[in-house]
Image (cartoon, rainbow, N blue to C red):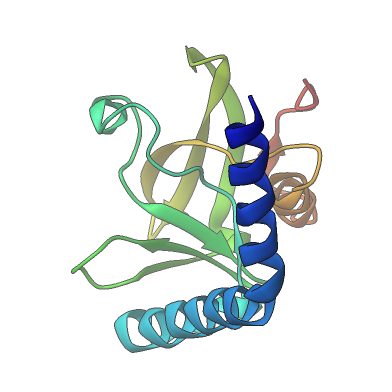
Length: 157
């Protein structure tokens, strides 16, 4: 039992002594992530809000939802997929955002319908909404500013 306590104490001491290194590692990691994102998409990551969740079903979710990351800013919705060009849609072109009947891992799948040159484009996403992240709620508010759009009024779960 004493060996376990000594081991835990050594780990705590190592973490305290290396706190600055650990902090700068994560800071540099996030900075490098922003640089890579800018190179790949020509967009500023810190100006965008992500509304889609990450991979959570070992890749099986691609059969039910779009396999893209969804971001938005004040004017546009962006679909970003690795090694493919960024797809942009004006938020004013979104005509409907609603829940579907499908749930994956207790997360609702949402449908976004966009009117693009009189052709309807439908995307299905699972949001990254949580108690600490309300980006999807902000997105719904932004879409709702357009009087021609339909936003599911029962969007709070």
